[in-house]
Image (cartoon, rainbow, N blue to C red; front, side, top):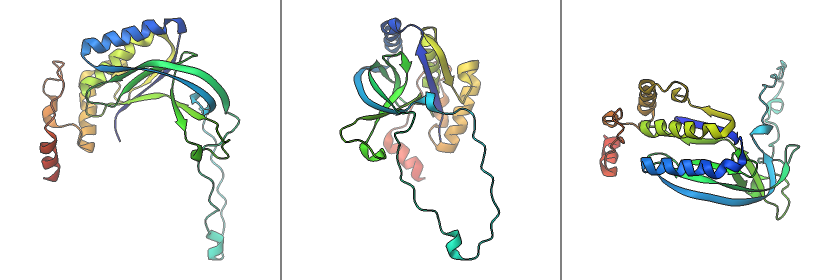
Length: 233
């Protein structure tokens, strides 16, 4: 449970990647966020990416009415192997990924990393034991849209949306999903309300942390020892 911003897209002009990353670094310096450079090479089999996900829902199978005569008739089906399969979507890749990993003070890292084709995608390496019939010595990857979990961090949520707005002119097929609606509306009151609701459910946003949000201040946090005592009471 939590508030997550998901984002994906592709560079309109891959030659402008350095220009985009310079803009991201400058933004981080202005708001005093730490960041790290990311650069690595991927070579292996890509099991699937967001392009391989079917958008149209498959029809539900018809349920057949059946009369059970004994316990043997309702025995569970044999267990299926767990893991990724090297199916028709799998393809070989040999590419570089490069970008910036932004580290806001009160959320998980926020990544803006692009592959050689200009795609803004989150590549993870899949361990061999999670690939059914994996070839020995082969590297396997899966690609997903990026996401940023912002529960309890109203100001950071707002600034992440500002940063995404900053890179939007460089992108095409740019998709951002924000459950609070702030990305589309810029409604700060609704943004605070959504975080308060989630905070009440998850205990991640104290009432006192709302002071100063409209002034652009970071929400204060109680010392760890105090937060522990509060949870016990």
